[in-house]
Amino acid sequence: MSAERLLAHYDRIADAPDAIVQLRRLILDLAVRGKLVPQEPNDEPASELLKRIANERARLIKVGEIRDKPSLERVANADAAYPIPLAWEWVRFANIADFSAGRTPLRNDTSFWNTGDYAWVSIGDMEDGQVLTSTRETVSEKAREKVFGSEPEPPGTILMSFKLTIGKIARLGLPAFHNEAIISIRPHLAELDAYLFKILPKFAKQGDTKGAIKGATLNRDSISNILLPLPPLGEQDRIVSKIDELMGLCDQLETARGRREGIRDRLAGASLLRLNAPDSDNFEFDARFALDALPALTTRPDQIRQLRQTILNLAARGKLVRQDSNDEPASELLKRIAGERAELVKKKEIRREDPLDPVQSAEVPFDVPATWVWSRIGDAVLFTQYGTSQQARPSADGVPVLTMGNVQDGLVVWSNEKRIPQSSEDLPALYLRKFDLLYNRTNSAELVGKTGIYLGDDGVRTFASYLIRLRPSLLSSNPRYLNIAMNAPEFRQTQIVPLIKKQTGQANVNGTALKNMLIPLPPLAEQERIVTMVDSLMAICDRLEANLTAAAIIRRRLLDALLAEAVAPNDDRELEAAE
Image 1 (cartoon, rainbow, N blue to C red):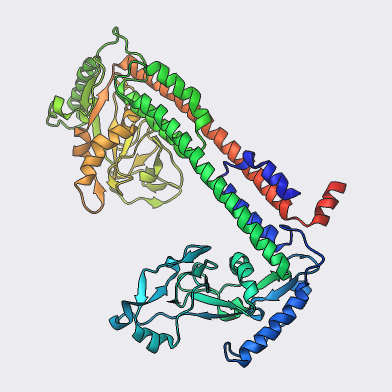
Image 2: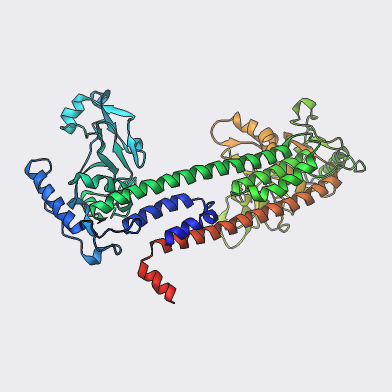
């Protein structure tokens, strides 16, 4: 059987994000197609069951328990959604059950609300497929008399939502009223109750919906005309039992998967924690262990992201490559950068600015190797500069203006550019050069502090005023290292987040704050080694991510194929086999 083949292949599809959700859907699909349990020739056919339902409906009308409404026409063969066993019948919902919507008392009349007299159900109180035993709100005896005019629905009543969230179903575990987005359902024959509770949501969600202010909704006519496959009563009982059994298995699979994912997360987290632990004597071993183990432990993109962030943190802490005592100390770099800056001032290419305060030991967030120094960003680059404030407009001509949307994952990308005239007074001073860094100074807290390196051509593009350009020294620093350090999560946590937390409204970390941020600066030779190592490790992350994507595609295709095969008509499968 196809269902058996799916279970046989389950270990290959188990890590698909929605494998268990799809398995649950398959169980219901098989159930309502007559493929979940065998048909029994001794079962009374559904055609006879429909006669019993009609007789009971007539009795209920006679005794006044339900209103007399015309029966809906029988389901024509052309309207059937798919073939069903010979002993089954397609039926319209209103021909086998009565239903009624609830009400919501006036909210501004406090005498209706929360007196504790009667439970009142909203969709938010319902947990799909479960027994409802409590509600967040209650209504009063006055509401019962003035608004509902009846007794509450009794325990055991099926409730189903039909507005906004369509097909959410629950069973009352206490007497309760409910709102107008929910119907209470009373099968004409009590024996239909268990089967309807299992299968009704699947068909309600496929019903004809009408537009509503906040989303889709069913109306009385579309609810009445929901088409349902009706098996013989004996088969209904077997279907319900098998659904319960298989859904229990799904619960076990879900629990097992959760445990498996938890173990993977803990192992991956432990590996990354060992890498992040400062002053570890076993760093090289830990690093090799993590890189060897993580391919087997990573099953989700967020785990790869954690690895990328760990690599950046290690790079900025001096733990990614060996230090070399022969390297020129980083303090000498700062002297040379200061000399370059002074030369630019002398040439009047930039303005002279007051010196920044020396870095105090109490300010530094963590220790760095002896050949490194902590520097303020304003001292580690030649200058910082705000972008153009001139209005940029879509145009085929002019100079493209890069915005915060062009700063992505540590890079500056460009597309769909707006432009300013080439004659703008902001140019040529604000043309970007290769290896400039762009820093986003204002927007939401998540976007402020995004930094990317520009690797395009010189003199082709400029940038908007809510970005700040950092011009690195190409002689005394490696711009790629500066970009790595400013994108390390620890840089964000120690330098940007504390400034944002002090603000209300739109976050803004301006140029003055940027220049005073602290950055760990290695010798130039070590910067080169760090950049090479980061590129190598990020390439490994790229391969891990590509493998995850490829594996996910394979799992998805296999799952889809097995699901399609499981619900395919038998004659179709036989035809395919014959071909």
